[in-house]
Each structure stands twice: as structure tokens, then as C-alpha cells.
Image (tube, rainbow, N blue to C red; front, side):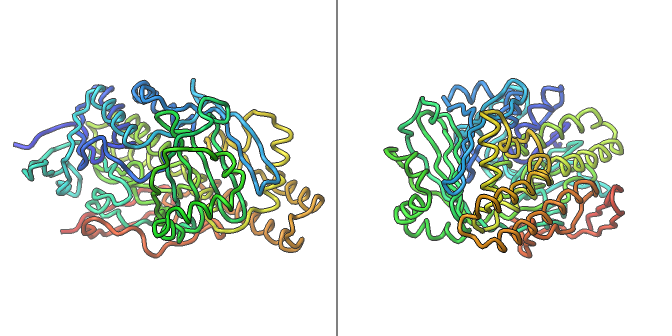
Length: 488
């Protein structure tokens, strides 16, 4: 006899554990399967802004994570070409006014622990064999345990929260994104002990923009650990792995303020790197199934938004789907509404990531925007809102602000860049921002167009871990559902 539950979730990390915790708190029977044994590492820069930390609090994981002695970072310092910088406090989210950067080996086990404490049955070293179907509807999963024994679980809802190479997405025929944008930047990072631990500098998130490269420093866990990160061209990931210390010294030379800040750090780890971070949207809901977190949507990690959005998507999925699990028709409509809400919540950050991943020198216009913000705003939230999700990209970088930045750059000087090039670049950037605004106003469901200048279409999305189910799709324009039928 198959096992039965209300919801089965594949993947026990951010989105899966968060959904499980909220569903279980609502009194539902939840089974979570994950192929890993926790604690388990994951390639990730793992920064959470205040809104993401607040999601940890709401799911019940924050106290456990605090026990690992993470540094709480209430400040952002942003520097552009060594010419202009700002220091801000983050906008508060609920009771939280700080960031945290907790390694996944520490963080994810606390997420699993919280899901279990809420009542979810989390099973480690269990892998998905396939999704069960009845009448074109997902009704459960077949899995294999650590010993290879297979069994079935019947459920009212199947949630895939199993990451970028989602097996659930493959099983339901949604693996190939309907919208994807390749990355220009890669990421290379390492940990060290921070010589300024315990000072205000030791509690500040740093971002240095020099030339076409970006350097970061995030206070981490357990104190006095910090994470140091470079995001240059994607090809640098290979260079970093071939000559770790040579690469590291070259990048510090490119970012002299970063070199000064981290001077004297000790206990440096080996480098970690990846150049494969293409962004995408997948169809993320269908009859009896949904894709949460990176399984359904991924944005460039240059803006550090992925963890927060995974937690948010898991919580909102639980809140929307939980009350209607016993009515398949209402459930499918709720899942579709959730997917639309997810898109509207994330699309502006998707474009922000696409803009930031382009390899090009710091714009003189941005230098002047940072200079004016640093001069006029004190330590209150402003530019940081676009990272912390206090406001959207269009709300922070308004059209008048972009035009004002251009005016300041022309009046002050363009840092050695020809005036014509600055004007042409500003006009191109303005067109991108207008395109993003137009898309947000359209609010189209599963929009597959391209905002030129933001997106860099990716013809080769990540390879699936298993064959993709064959589907036939009857697409209804804009807000109406897409009926997906799995063919035999």
C-alpha cells in the first residue's frame, strides 16, 4: 500500500523546508524527500538581506541559526571607482534590520530542523524516481531510499524544490525555461577570519565597483569569519581554479579599497568558483504540482536575491495552496495565482540581475548617483533598497534620478570617458529601464519577450538530470491558464 500525505516536497533546502514548515504548522501532513544527508554544502554566496532574515524568523529557523554566532550586519557601504561612496543602514523588515551570511552547511541543517520541529517528515538520502500521474494530474511520487528500496507516496500536491537541475521540472515537462538570460559574470569566493571583527566595519556589507569588476565582503558565521567575493567575467572562474593565489592577488590589485579592508585576514580557505549562473523562468504550476525556489525561477547571483526569493516562494506557496488542498480545481487555480504572484514579485529583480551581470565599466552616471546619495541621505536606506527589496529597481533608480546623474556627470566630468560615450551609454541605460517599466505595467503571465539591454538570451539552459517529459501545450494569451498534458 502506498503512503499518503497532504503534500510531498522534493528538496529540503530553502524553498522546500520553508514550505514544509508553514504547511506543517497549518496542521497538514507533509513529507519532504532530499537526496542529501545534512549538513550538506551547496554552491552559494548565501547572503540574506533583512527581508530574507525575516523569512527565517517566520518559519522558525532564526533562533537556531543565531546559535551559530553569525555576524549581524546593519550597514551597507558601496564604493564606485574609488571616487564616490555611500554608507547606509538597511530598511527594516518586520523586527529585522540586519543582514546575515551563513554558510550553507550551517544554515540548511537549521532549515531542516525547523521543518521537522513544525511537524514535517523530512527524509534524508531519499531520491525521486518519478512523479505519479492519474488522469493527467500529479498525485504523488515514487522514491528510492538510501538502500535503493522503492515505494510510492500519494499526495494532493507535489512540490518540486530541488534546484536549478530540478528532477521534478523534468518529470512534469517544464524543465526548458520559457525565458532565459545567460550570465556575463562568474563568482569566485573564499572565507577568512576578519581582523576587524567586532567593529562597525566588521558588521558592514561592502561592495566595491572598480572598472568592470565587482568585489564584495560579507561578515559571515561563525564570527569572526567573513566571505570575500569577486564577480568579474564568467571566464575568470576557470582562471581562478587554475591559479588560485595568482588570481586572488590580481583581483585585490584591481580593488585597492577591498585590499585595504581585508588586509591582515587569516585562516584563508581555498577558492570556490562557478561561471554557470544563467537566469530563467520556468512554467511553475500545473495540475497537482508546483515548482518553488530555483526549480521554478533563478536570477543572476550578482544581486544576492536567490535565497530570499526561495524562502518567500515557499512560504507564499504554503499560504496559498494549504487551504484548498481538498478541492483539485480550486487548488490548480490557487497554484496559477501563486505563480503569477511569484513572477510579479521577482521580475524586477530578474532584470536588475541581468543588468548587473553585463561586463562593462562603472558608468559615470552611477558614480554621480552614488555620490549624491552618499552626500544627501546620511546613513538611512536608499540605494540599498534595491538589494534589500525595500523598493523595486524602478522605484530606486527613477527616470529623474538617472537624468540627474547624467547631468551631474556632464557637469563634474566623466572620469576620462568621452562625453559622447557617456551620453550614449546613459541613453541606452534609460531605454533598458523604460523597457523594464513597460513590462511591469503589462503584468503578462509567462511573458517570453526580451527587454533589450537587460536580457542576454540563453540558447542552452542547464542540462536536466533526467529525460524531460514530452508535453503538448495549448497556450491561452496573457492571464488564462496554460493546459499541460503529459503524453505517454
